[in-house]
Image (cartoon, rainbow, N blue to C red; front, top):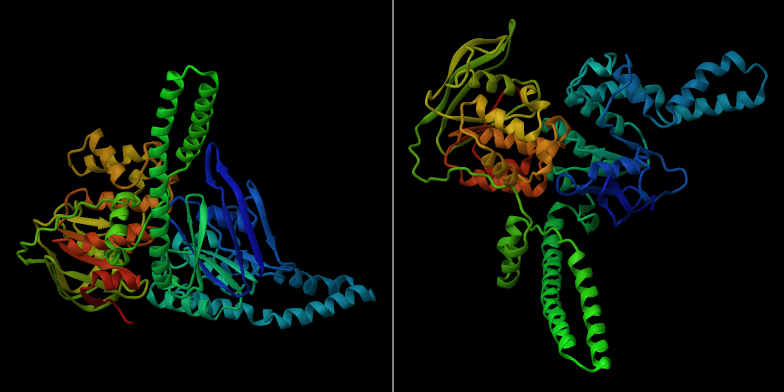
Length: 555
């Protein structure tokens, strides 16, 4: 065991986020951390990394344990290059480099310094630091970040910085790596390389992710919910089976509590009436005591919050009648997507492309693309980052009826053409929230987004949408910029569906959504009557949605 974690309280103001977190980590163990958006996964990592000390509890690491973590923010780095940033995160690198570079200038005949210098040279060689710059540069290239090693980290996009964080972790040679949502900005080849590293990594790894391809490769899954944690041995598939069984037991326990509460309420009234009717002082005291005991137990049970119950769709379909009835009664609220599922499809062509080649300047990104997308069909755009998938989507959106400009700036058509049904309503799920809405409070952002599209909107509808997508009344006053990644993703789904679209264009829709929300999205899309054009590196999502695969650029 290299770490023993106990958190008895972690609060933000009056809100208690955690109160019963307790688990340990073994050497070399790969652990997936899952939970609904907002339960405190990133907060937990801050505590484990030592950047958040405002909690009650104890984090005990085995002596000498080196912990590294992916950073969420990159402020105050000045002109530090990508290579300098990665190397500065390597345990011992900075210290050993300092000794090797400075001691020859000052050590003279000082045997203590000479010994330290000699040991540093040997340790530097043992750690492979003489070849580290070449290794890191090669890894950056594998993650489609060529020639960025000597660029300032501040000049990179948010997605590129996330990839740099993963490369830093992969070369850290630590005992414990804390990795937060590593695959959100990876293409399918980069993700396969990350999974290969995960499978062979010597260090223990805690990874926050809802990427089921990654969760399929872990040794254990720890779920955060209701301020506590539950540990499931095995990978994602094992987690689903164990979760269904344990949730059934928890629902049965909760139902017993509800029955006990109902019974106690009756008892309190009975004891109160009997006390009032009694004339004997001893009898009055007896019923008074029984009433007080019952009231105390009732208050304790009513103070318990209802647990969060979620069972995946496949496991839920196999529940027995009694447990299925309990689940229908108690299951956690999930997002509600209103997608038309009318089976009367005309199957007419919505999107068409013939021998299309697009690019910028003098070089095409891809060529020979042909599309024949009809109502009720799905088409996956597959290709490496930078192959032209986003360019193709931008060119397609330029042809939509609601587009104001003729062609996206800089995109050049080298051959062929792309057309879209001029009557079709299009819904787009994008990775980034539009700057137009980014600094607006959620309620105002939803209203403004509808008005910008000349769609009817009211205060009642805004509140209804917030409820459907699991936002609280308090969330409505929070600027989008301050919402979590999962909350921003749910706003993007609201935006995508605002105009009752007949064609959906999805760009990595499962990024930032939690597992129940991903499943709800998959369920809704399976019934959807319109057409879907999507980009996703989530193998489970691709299997669920299906459709033809269009390779954009080289594999």
